[in-house]
Image 1 (cartoon, rainbow, N blue to C red):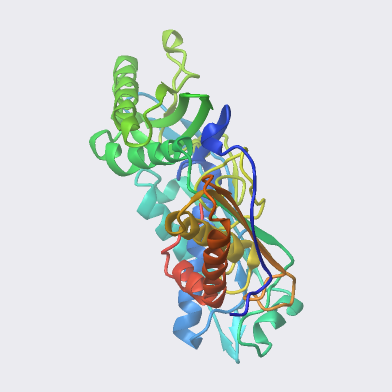
Image 2 (cartoon, helix red, strand yellow; image 1 turned 90 degrees about the vertical axis):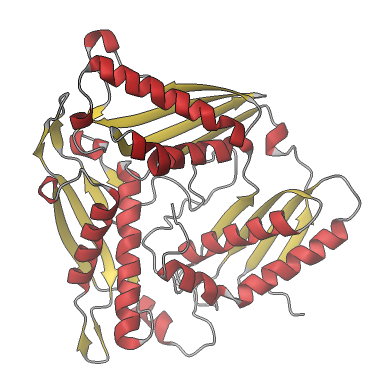
Length: 399
């Protein structure tokens, strides 16, 4: 079997669960940075669909520079108003002409942005948002990468992707707390807004969760009602804790509130983008949905980059899939760290390096782990187009 610059090694370090301190963060879908991520990725998926429909291939594009500029609002119990709309700047590069045919790229991405907002933010009315499209055309040297004859696309950059598996208890708890609030509890408590940030701190065997949850003012009658909702959110989170950890967990919700003064986290739309918080692609969650300062991370923005040959996107998603499979399928692995490095202009299925580092469970079977891990990496490299298709079809999360 031909191995493509794959290096697998056992490492000797304290697994995350056994370390004394751990910090984990998740910015929910309504955080301004996550809104930028979500719109950028929706734009890219829409372009992929349009290109494939017209030409059968994905053409060059990158939409990972989308920006959110905050508006101004006057929230009030029972319902306030937005007095200055949120400004969303759709920025990036896209192929707007191919083989003599014009492509309505601006129209495609504006529609994608609107659809994404409608699907995810029911209280963010069209009149509360200005969408400005400023797509350019990619530089010719990068476009040429798509046109050269090769079995695999050629890397558009020298960059790397990184991932780890499995998630720790704290990581799982932080991630699923936000998902629970949005996907389940919001159906019973419509006052819950989409702008939720969860910060987890573990000190040995005690975890504190600090949750910032925007409330939608028209569903909150007064300050007493607000306090009741906040207490219910805390109680509901405490109820799901045993699903992810047996450690002691302290839950804190909206700790910046000053209830005596009537100051609380109230919004009109469910996102702080309405009143002062700007957002940018790539400043929030990594592609596993978390911000994990105690783990290796890439600074690349995954959302919005083209899924065909942009290694800043592909290699992060690829590393995640490889790490998850090794952790799940290879017996004797406590933790695994995957890093894949590209070289610009080289085939993406032949990275400059694919590194796997694993922490064994102490038994003497490192050679088997090494062999099985190499096989998993090699198979994924041979099937990188699967990553492209899954991203284009919206089957892989990027934030």
